[in-house]
Image (cartoon, rainbow, N blue to C red):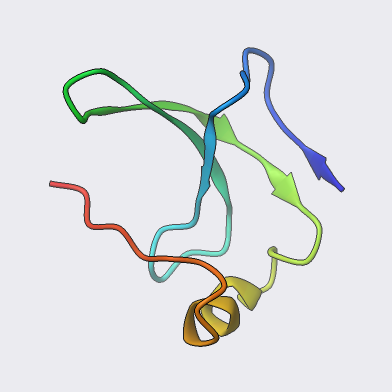
Length: 65
């Protein structure tokens, strides 16, 4: 279950920044940039569980430059 901000579209991605707990919705733009859509609630990812999933290779990390 999740709650997302208005304006979310198919293909948008969920992002949790290292050191944070709040998931965000981002949208990949042409040219490799991202647009910040807003914060969201994702059941099962609100208390640091994403780091466990990263260690188990169920999610991937991405460096924003």
